[in-house]
Image (cartoon, rainbow, N blue to C red; front, top):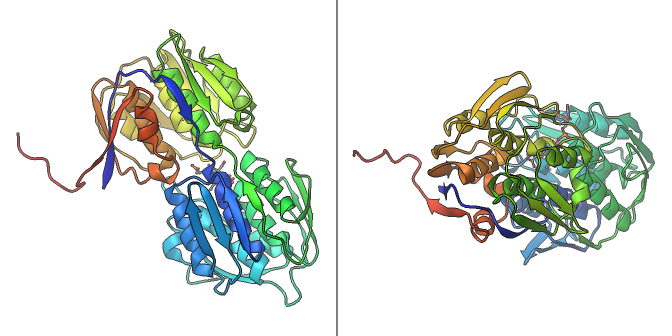
Length: 432
Ligand code: EPZ
């Protein structure tokens, strides 16, 4: 098992490069199944989730290679339209195989993803969407068994309530090669979805309304392989902005490169500006200058262009550095607060009530041994360790490795005292 050991009190300085997007890369990988041949995806991050989805693709018969952030997927022979429980339970986005295999093979047997670290993550919208397109859906032994009619999916109209990133993507994967036309109302418009839609269009999909809440697609028999460039990771960008605001030396500027500031959405950028941190936005850079004193800014998450739920744990750590009482409400996942008890071990004074956490900021944090519980919770513990007095051990960082590429290398190159260390989680501490 591996942990990160961080000794706080060192200023973050210099330039941090944002890696490419995890949550855009995965739908791009699923889309390769819709075109027989070799698709090349550039700017793919080397992450656990990418490795897991690569394994899922190989099980269907695809060949997958990743060299220096360029992925090649050979989908010439797809003979096994299944995605097993052992992999889908590890990584929910494997559920995209449902739409991709229906779109390619007309049938699919995909494990239900089950819950995740912070509670149920339903897929009803995915299943209802496939049925609206004309697929038959049966549940057998924890698997979704889907079939298209013999002459292909007729297509159909459906409305997503609530708007769902995953359901929008999954349904489009099936609709792009349907026999008829389809219409998705209240579709997700997150940047990850837009980048995915633009790749489908490059592949020959007849898709209209990209970036709006009404998507219309006329099915085509098959799509063609392409070479496509993935976008930067907006959640890593937001994470690094928060890191610079709380750990940057007041008055010094930290530069973030390979950035798409517009992908963060207006609400996050406005909230960030209200903290007093200065933010200079370039074409593909953001310069952050920490203020002498941060101001507390309460936020509520929302679907894009609202405040990203994937940044609420990190924002909570920022609020611990601001004197005064403030709140973080998660309207997307009302129970995504597993990081709070771990932060409390470091001296954070926060109370969860319903879908909101109230933070009493301004109290100094102290290093402790803490445990990652999910991807974004784990990075919030690293941020807290950067500003805590003493040393913090963040355990179970396999959660972190799902979505942050070489994080400790990036941070240690920018002044932070952080190292990856092997440890035995079950070793009892030796007597003093
Ligand atoms: C995507 O998850 C992201 N994952 C999540 O990021 C992100 O938190 C989430 O979107 C919201 O932005 C990937 O892109 C791989 P949703 P997804 O379907 O698609 C409800 C990370 O940290 N819902 O948009 O699963 C759901 O309960 C991960 O990188 C249904 O009710 O999210 C939630 O309240 C964590 N029924 C809301 O919709 C459904 O069938 C939005 O969820 C599907 C969703």
